[in-house]
Image (cartoon, rainbow, N blue to C red):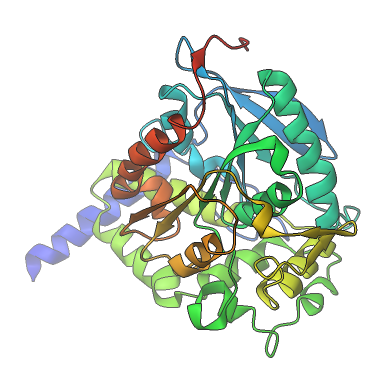
Length: 367
């Protein structure tokens, strides 16, 4: 008992020492009312290729002499920020693709304000359409591969169903694409009997990032509000553990505001009515038919994903027209797929699969 008292005292001192070394914090705002240490993240060099209304397209600096002829575009969710894919040099899905010889591009969606009344149609048929054309032009390639993470998988599926001629391969990472209540996760939380997205938007004119953060956390309340902080204190003697813990805390709470029109429609038509999988979704009057997704398709899922349970992704593969399908699974959660050791090990298989479908290695344009 006395030993544990002294050890807890030591943990407290080590935690205090860590905060003295990391004494800068992200600014507290009405949309992000959190006191979060400003720890270093997003380490891989990149350049901005194009920008439109705060939405940006980046290209990462290649790590190999030659790259595959088909570039990879990563489409992230409208919520949170994409640096979870490049948290540290050791925990970076982006770096893994670069070191394997891929040209990697990334869409970073902007932080919406009350003035940014973008619709789902705009995100697909203006922003994403234009950025795919920019990637094709910059990489001098007629087609691209798309990797969509979380909600980005839905955006990628919609775009690809509309413009399959531009996509050589598509990968869905922890993506909710088939919306059936019995699957749980965010689908249950968005049940139209209990949740009206318009009621969220009305007081603010947009969807504030804090609402989305708390909405995700409430799916596992004990761990998100208590358990992980107890675990952090018990490991406070390990400085590297604290570094990684607060990098994750920064990402979880460093969200973005979402445009109201896109959020309302995505929730009502996809989450509440399964319009994407059933071919009932329209973008600027054009029907989104998943059967037009005929190129090689892969699903990367976490068996313990509580936000996007595996079946939310896997059942959508039954809806697409592709005959070349692959499934990659790891016994991890939603974020564990891109930051945990077990999740990162899975990417060697994913990269091998994509490399076999991305053409020859060649010298590409330097940054």
